Image (cartoon, rainbow over all chains, first blue to last red; front, top):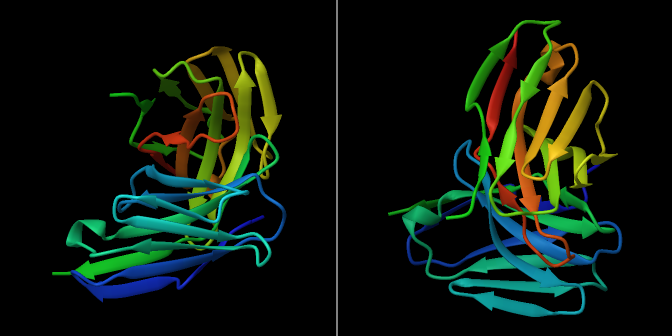
Length: 110
Length: 113
């Protein structure tokens, strides 16, 4: 069963614009993570936010977490063509279950 | 550069064959995982292991088994491959402790004909 659901399913923007992706989840979590996947390759871990944190930054990435609404958002600022990829949120349930959403496909056009 | 290595990038097998997917990590991680990824369904957890010889079922273990005889290696076994097991298989690992991200391999695209 999927824990996270991303919104939108697909996003198309111009270079330099910001990209915002949202994620909702169903049950209580220990942390929430965001991953990137380039066309048919493995996933790359981007950022992790703990359940007691509300916001976290890493370079051009900003993640927020609202546990009362069971939602998170990923903001990529000043996007580049190289950011074109699929982005997945994943919620840690219990100790060893990381449950993924279906992902957002981001296309950044030069 | 730390990594998770999956033995095959592409694999084509016949229905009924026994299939072994191998995964090796060089980071001394305790936890290892096997996921499958299908369009529209996202990543689904098949099995995971938190120590040598230890394993637990994920959400979709039917038709699969696993083996972890050494800490660095986690094998996924399709006992009798079927066409509905055609998928991208992803192996991952992470250290002991809750707040760590997973390191994924590049994936094995398995086609069962």
